[in-house]
Image (cartoon, rainbow, N blue to C red; front, side):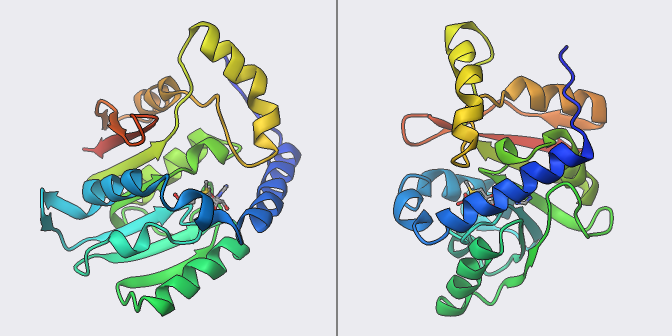
Length: 226
Ligand SMILES: C[S@@+](CC[C@H](N)C(=O)[O-])C[C@H]1O[C@@H](n2cnc3c(N)ncnc32)[C@H](O)[C@@H]1O
């Protein structure tokens, strides 16, 4: 197994460049992504906020990488939502959305790194990570933080585009990784990495990925904390 260990300096540089990239994305993000991600966003909310189909639960939910808050209007009023993101420019837009749509169930929006969550252990009934894990310099650390703040019996839901596990597509994606990173995308993050992390962390069940539109391009995985 290839272990990637980044120095503190490398991590700091990565985080700074992410902030700069999303400062540029913030004004145009919704125009480009709102429609494209809407099915994935709705399915992610269904997974974290509903106890069974059409029955909203009453839960405290953490959304990691909340961005401009595109997913916020989909949460039922019965849930209390806490959103964090690295980028203040993205958070400003999320905050404007909360005000405009009077989303009273959004209890907090804060600037925070996914790898250093300022919450106590077992604070949330569910944690959502939509389209962020591939951008974090130390994804395993972010996943462990998400699992730490999740209550026992709770669910972590990761939604993203996963890279191919092997074969020519995987090779091309790995080659393109440094290039696409410059525009805040990722092509090479693999589902196998989440499975390896979960096995090492322990006490977690990783469910099979579920496909979301368009055409199953994005996937959602539920990780259950026992
Ligand atoms: C592709 S956007 C997704 C935004 C939102 N989740 C959505 O689905 O529309 C990625 C977001 O992750 C945030 N992000 C990147 N690295 C982060 C980190 N280390 N901690 C927290 N947020 C991060 C970016 O600032 C950006 O808002």
